[in-house]
Length: 202
Ligand code: GLN
Image 1 (cartoon, rainbow, N blue to C red):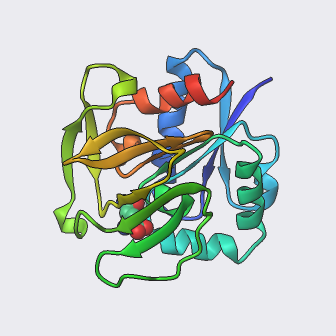
Image 2: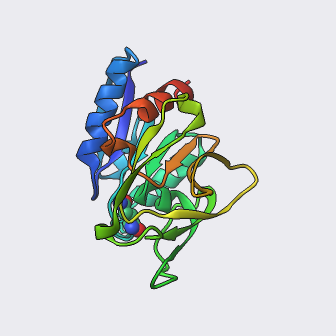
Image 3: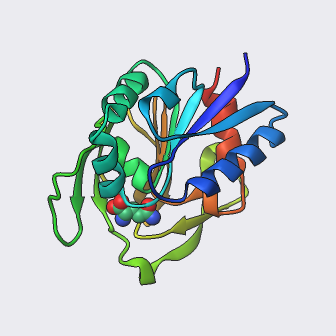
């Protein structure tokens, strides 16, 4: 069966995810396609999907105006593997609060048993990069790119933290879900996407 990886394409850095997937597929010697997902019909026959970084309130707002949101949620609950990065992690979460405006009541998929605080690491101008250690990727540190990034405030029993920054989880996994506060698609290091292809597509 040919692998088809979807990238939610409503807003955000989808092109960077498309490139990261192409690179990771090559790295893993997998022939596969990458498809931008804009409507529920695009979800058909996907092997996995990534939810990119961007603005979770915009992405959730647009997706929930069509059947895309509910269909995506159903597919995820059915086992579709998902990589959510930054805004993508927020969309997956069960609860989000904004650091400044607290409860925005934004549409969330609510499939990842974590609660996040949006914009925890500050505004756009306070974006930063930090080398972090991600145990499953081996000993070589990973360049974490943090842009208005969320922090995981509460973590459910079935959720594993794979990396921390200052003692707070910034990369978590739960069943078919992998989510990061940072942007692996901007790091120039395809190890996290390759890890996902190896471990989540079985
Ligand atoms: N702060 C953004 C949000 O809440 C996420 C930022 C990002 O994806 N870089 O959606």
